[in-house]
Image 1 (spheres, rainbow, N blue to C red):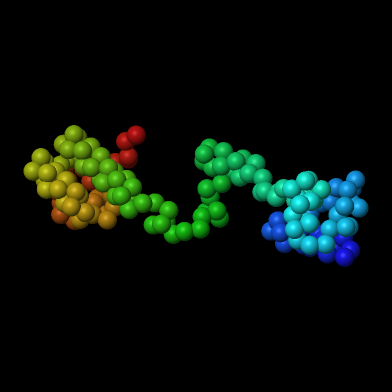
Image 2 (tube, rainbow, N blue to C red):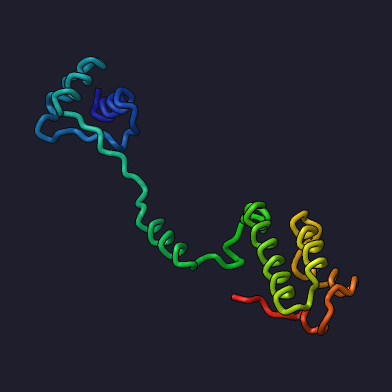
Length: 160
């Protein structure tokens, strides 16, 4: 048997590819004399035949990308894979929506554009999911003439 067959046998025993098998150059004569699988196993245990370690995938690029994402980069339209609904949890979407609507209603009540009775009714409707968005809430207030003072009260900017 030549060394190629020994390498194949060693690869099969160690359960690695042929390219991973390395012979000790000082002990080639011993390796040439080995005939059976048991002989090869003996040489493996004595260190004459070695399997090179598996080379993994470096995580450096991944870590750099992760740092960038934590800073808010790499999140543009072209990088997004899922739908908007799959990227934002339903509960989180609800929280953003209801907080915006309640903030707007509170502002209208504080500025006396909305009576306490109307405020309570609309506030409850908002909590029940009646309004799709803040825009829908404004439209409802306009159509039902619930805003008492100015019409531009509907156009109030979001308070930060």
